Length: 112
Image: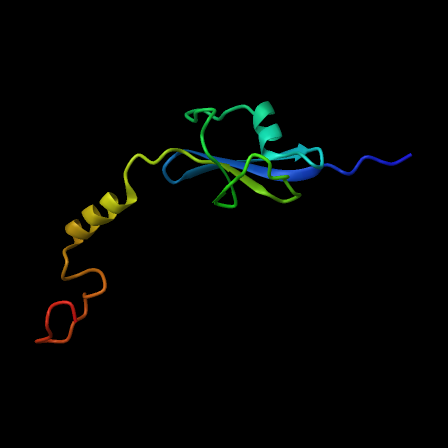
């Protein structure tokens, strides 16, 4: 008689707001896929059930088999486009004090 494989331990993470992360461990049967886990999971507050999931920061495929030690993350939708946010930060810092051309030699042409 074959013994059942031991359960796997994963960590589930979500961020209810910026700069705050909630992590909780879970024990799952070996061979559980992301889709199977999602079907039985409770959605964290502030996250829609169809929110994107990631494994260690990379998008998770529904048929991916979870392994012992995996970190499964609920991802919130972006509230601000990262390119727009960077432009706004750069504008606030000033073009002469930040970025690639912050330390130009005196008399050099712009952009060199």
